[in-house]
Amino acid sequence: MKNIVVLVSGGGTNLQALIDAQRAGKIKNGKITCVISSKEGVFALERAKSNGIKAVVLPRKDYGDVIEYSKAMLETLQSEKADLVVYAGFMTILDKLITKEFVNKMMNVHPALIPSFCGKGFYGLHVHEEVLKRGVKLTGATVHFVNEVCDGGPIILQKAVEIENDDTPEILQRRVMEQCEWKILPQAVSLFCEGRIKVVDNKTVIS
Ligand code: GAR
Image (cartoon, rainbow, N blue to C red; front, top):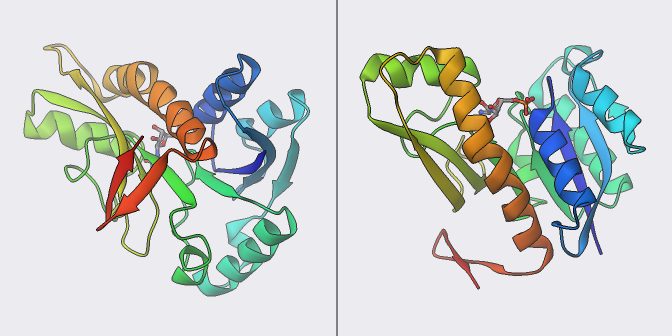
């Protein structure tokens, strides 16, 4: 059984999707053992507590720079014996001292079809604003492994939705979450825990 540690910074709807999938028996060979938040008082922490999952707050604002924060995060992940680390709306970039320790053992859900609308500065609602500004006809979500390049690690799963004429960033964000993120994140976590993801030449092969 793999220990899954989920990193959050906000409302935690993706965390909830993982909790619901776990309850429905859809996360095979893995268990959410800890939730770590980079912010105090966020609703994701309530979701963890009300589901009996250990919740830890590691406030980003308490650390002077990303290296100090990453060291503290690494210690916490090691003491939690994390086998898989999942960024579920985690809005802090961590130093490579962490990604080096968790090569292809750390995944992120991004609210667009990578390599479009990704990289530094593309997060949350802003991604959907840019999607609508550009006028693309399809968008979606991507689950990928985290490496030292922001949103640059091997892609695990992607799912697309169509843009509609009267979309606002908020409406589109909701559609991408419901139809894409909340589906592919639990699927990717289960595939990992079942040992079904291999990485070859920076690409994943799913068996
Ligand atoms: C989600 O849409 C997630 O994909 C996005 O933030 C939202 C968090 O929602 N993450 C990023 O933009 C990371 N680059 P949640 O807290 O309700 O899961």
